[in-house]
Image 1 (cartoon, chains in turn blue, yellow, green, cyan):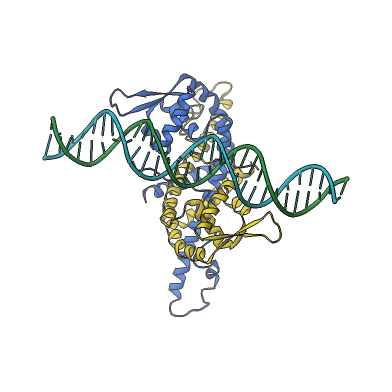
Image 2 (image 1 turned 30 degrees about the vertical axis):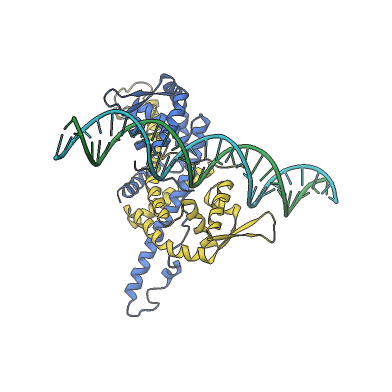
Length: 190
Length: 190
DNA sequence: TTACATTATCTTAAATTTAAGATTTAGGAC
DNA sequence: GTCCTAAATCTTAAATTTAAGATAATGTAA
């Protein structure tokens, strides 16, 4: 099976690291108005664009790290690791779903799924159910206890997330959703 | 020492999981214009706000995962793990920096720093240099070989990142930077 | 039906990170 | 100077994830 890669420290640095120093951009347009001034202009343009991209990458990494640290702390308060929480939430909504699909949804490798499903099953929060249609398939199914537990835990978590996002107004959040979604889609495809 | 927490699977799910179903929002304002219509309106308002926050959280998580997977793949092509790459990049710009500060900058625990610095030192890409001023302090210093290596690797990586970000126009990137930065700052403080 | 490619789950080992604590050193209060 | 607190690095063990491959079951094509 094709497995996925692990996340990095926080954001692959890339603080400011353009090939050209940014100062190149600051010479006036007439600094050396020789033959290939246009070329240099275009060069500067590209350099600037790339710097903005790198900056976006860094900002995204750091923000994600801060936000996720906070969210993870909250989940742990409820006795669930981040992966466990995500699995439980998925089951809470879907009720029952093949293990394979869990991995696809939450972007975790098969080994990790087995590991985490085992833990949750041992705690009685879910159970494995063999599929009657396809004997290769095993469903994970949330138990009543799992449902009770998640219902008790979720509202507080949702509030925590909401607080985390309070740096932006409602309108800004919507803008951010659009932009970030666009960004993510491109990364998936391209 | 206070250590930090690990990142989750991809984004702590939270698909759509409001306390109230979203359909509550869709009843016209005059649906049941009884005594506490205002209360219900406010309720719906808050529910909606929270759903937007959760959505933002999910979108951010997924986009980050996609982007970072791609970036990590690129770094590995150059023979560096994400953490290693980030360390090298930091050293490439700072030249020399105490180990402690590396951990602070790239948000990784001390144990991880020792582990990764060891690997890079063994490959001759950096060296440890004891501080003359404070015998508790050890600097990591990039070697000539490390510099050569990073100079060779970085431009291609920067291009890869730039491509990754191409889902947005220059203007959109700048907007995204502002929004995400604001979001991150809030999460750090609050 | 035989063969082959694919899918789903699990197993195992290696890689990496966190968490906790030990050691050494600094710096300040007394 | 002694004592106390904090900082910086390292060590170790446990937790978690990836990566690779084993096993079993399906579906399909010849």
